[in-house]
Image (cartoon, rainbow, N blue to C red; front, side):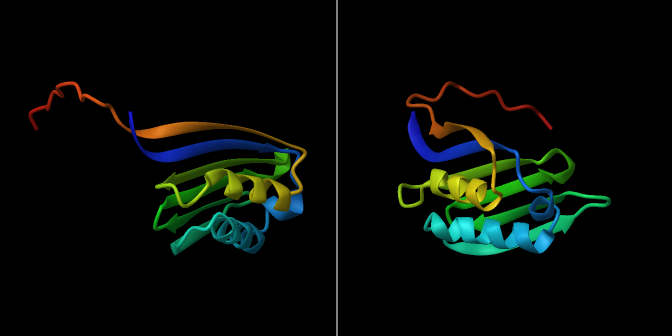
Length: 126
């Protein structure tokens, strides 16, 4: 495979309710996670749900960081995708887990990219 990027999917457990339910704190942590990893931020947007929870995305030149929180469960789902070799998605994941005062984090990395010899693709008629 010709690797184009690294995609880390993280399950973050045992987080503090007051952090996961605070849109400004989650936004600040996510923006700073991108900076900690060495990414170049383009823009970001976050939304606060009622009665609780926050979702948001930080668009970076190297791809994105995305999150959804379940404060009532002390849980956050984190997605960090980076292209190139300059930015390490694990730096961002570890920073978020630390700032959420997580009890545990389970994460896996997927290499994203092209197959060495692409198979013939079928194109559907529209």
